[in-house]
Every structure is written in C-alpha cells, then in structure tokens.
Amino acid sequence: IQSRSLSLGSWITIGDNKVAEILCISGFDWLAVDLEHSIINIEKAGDLIRIISMNQITPLVRLTNLDENLIKRVMDAGAGGIIVPNITAREQVEKAVSATRYPPIGNRGVGLDRAQGYGTKFNEYLDWQKEGPVVIAQIENISAIKNLKDIFSVKGLDGFLIGPYDLSCSMGIPGDFNNPKFIDTVNLILDIGKKAGLAIGTHIVEPDLNLLKESIDKGYNFIAYSVDIRMLSNEAIQARRFINNKL
View (cartoon, helix red, strand yellow):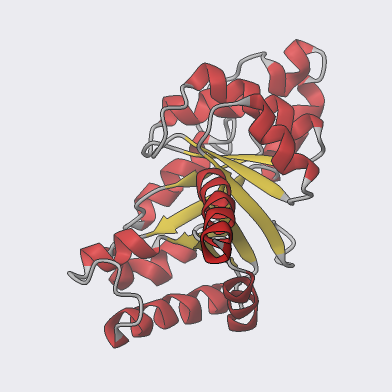
C-alpha cells in the first residue's frame, strides 16, 4: 500500500472466519474489516484480523468513526492500519495518524497484546509503528473538497478512498455517478491526490471486472474490489438468471 504501486483489496462485512479465509486464499493484497456498516464487534474484528495476518495479507479496519480508543484497540489486535470515514479537515487526519503511533510521535497508549507478540516482540513492534501503520482517509463529503490540499499534506497519511455514495448524497445527487458535477468533483479529488503523492483509492462495490479495468486506467492504485455480501449475492443472482433464461 505504502509503495504506491497497484494494490487490490476487498471488504469484509460478514463476521465469519471462513469468509475471511476464502478471501485470503483469493490472493488480495489487503482486506478491510468493516466496523462502520456491519454488526461485526471488536472481539470478532480481532478474530478476523488474526486470520488475515496469518495468511500474510495486510488487515485493515474501517472504523465506525474517528475514535482514538477504537484505533488503539484494533491496532493492538494486530491491524496493519485504519480506514477513517468522513474526513473533512486536516485536524482529523492528524488525530488519526497520532492515534496509531506511540509517543513521542503520537499519543497512542502502549499495551501488550497480539500486535506486540503478547510482549515477546515489543521492540520489533516499536520500530514498525514509527512508519508502518497504514492510514487511509475516506473522502465522502463535499465539505472536504475545500480542505483537500491541507488534508492530503499530513505526514503519515498514506492514501485516500473516495466514498461515492456518501459523496453524491452530500452533493444532493445520491447515486447519480454520471452527473457532470459528480464527475468533476471526483476528477478534482484525483488531481489533488496525485499531486500530493498519495495512494489513490476507490471502492468498486459491484463485482465488475470492466469497472476494475476502468479504475486502473483512471489512475486508481488502491482499489477495494467489491464486498463479501455483493460477491455472494451477485453469483447467486447470475445463476438464477441463467436458469430462468433456459426454462
């Protein structure tokens, strides 16, 4: 992720260990455990983080909100980084970055849990947390646009992820992704992000390889490809349609 080369991940909203294992076997670079729009609790998030990391894949956590205590807990559980929803100001990013690092770099409390090898790998983790935690800002409100240059200039921010549905809703055109105003806004975000040297992120909600190719062609290099529930639903619906057409 931090190399800025193409990085492909996916989204976990089903709190089942097998789902995480299946997506790990699929070979994604990272998997994001979604705590914002799912019923996954902190204990189950810890299970999923462990499974993902044991498969040599980077476990990220999409937070419910910018909560320093939640950041500390998921990082101690072994998360490789965080995705922070609804970033609209520089100060929010500074707070998020600080919450992933120990003093004097940040303000994260020091604990001994899975991330630190339950105390056996504290020194290794101490070195890693200086630069290692991934911090991704979700840009999903029109009010963030005027602050983008400041937001994207924060040291420790690795990239951003455009939230298309929330962004379009904040513009008064919910789900209208072909609206010229929406397209212009996304292009502006991309332009400022590229100039800042960040990982450029988008979420392709529906499993569509054509959209994946289009996203790569547009310059996105941090791509969340679909989500567990949509991949499952999509395959089931396609099978049913195929049978219906044959009957």
